[in-house]
Length: 228
Image (tube, rainbow, N blue to C red; front, side, top):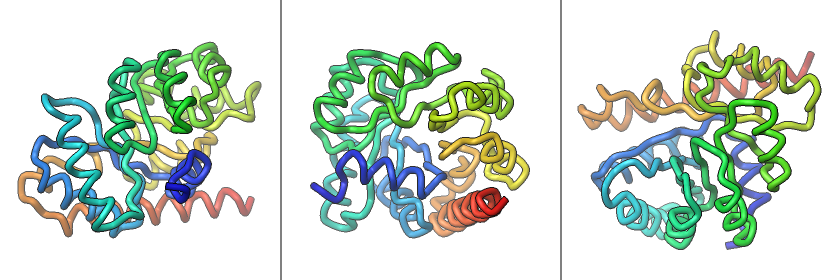
């Protein structure tokens, strides 16, 4: 739909700043968790392709939100090859994220007008991704490739780069201030925010509170940085 075209999705991701990263094999639990994220202001959610029949779970969840809450923007993560990207796009994915850069995935996404954020760990990989039409580059694993210092180093000679780290980003003021201060436009946060304890307890209110606090904290930090 037009409201979820490539540019609208990219804008929503950057405005939201915090992208929940989540997977579970149970459809009902996924729906409850994603609704909690949406209620908290995080309507762009990355569902990771990490289990058997994940594509079917994703399809069921995406079909649900297409009717129940069309404002939810479902993306898929952990995509490493073009056929899998095509499958999830056919099942309703509005953005595609991967742990590595794959040119064939970029081509499929470009052909369908879907944002692609591949995992990159060097300036060369980031440049290669941009050459393939990537607007928001995922830096992965964020803490292992140099953390905020790596982002700063890249942004110096390549200030046009939009970076979204995943891995090593914590939902704390100290962590978010370092990352956004380095110049990122968004970040993916998984089990540090949607914790196993909350999932095991099916504490959806607790998940909503965690996500809302993190989204609001990121917005506050970004506004403060913009005012300087």
